[in-house]
Length: 330
Image (cartoon, rainbow, N blue to C red; front, side, top):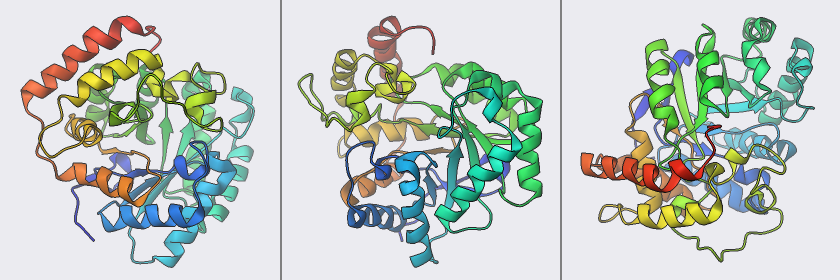
């Protein structure tokens, strides 16, 4: 296995690789991924130094969790922290976020992953009111006391939700969208997380693939790919698809970003390197559907830090191309 930089994941007390593996793709919402390809992708990530998998009970209605559970059973030498999420399989009303439901959801995830205690469970972008509920955090503390989960965190859509969760002493980590086309968390969330000792997991790091530089205005995605059916937020929050950026605007910005890649690095690796070096980030979780993608993503951890000139160019790109083009709901 190739060694990779490890950072402590907030209040979990455990270290994880700075580049993890997001496994939404393995569930099927990015097009079908054959089982052999899924296992190959997981194995390539581990062999490349990845010690952090992120999944959710809703990814493929449990398929992603099941694949991870089977893989890790076959690879007991792989020391991987698995973070899963809960809540999105139920109707999105605050009344559903109660202890009995949490236990039911946890039991399903524990079965899928083949473990007695889940490493980290995150509320999966619940209704905003949930982040302010004392009863919700009491229930999560109960799950820890019952040893169903070792730690809990939140996955959020907005900076305001993140800041609300950061005030809670039991929250170990916050997962938030962060990439060169989505900069608001840099100013509002990351400093607060550092002060609180809470881990930051950066998701949607490539803006649903835009920052790979591979797509054009004419690219067509499969009907079952969320980049087709959720482009305007038809099925879930628009921010999860292309970071909420209008596709044409995103393609133009991505082309400009690609020119910033240092020699020997791809645009995708450059985006991941940019995220890794933001103060307060614990890990970034790019998805992968193939061995080659998993290896290439992991290799971003070994790149030299981007110079200040590149960091300034990213900020300028965001200000010119993105800030004026998206709604301030971010």
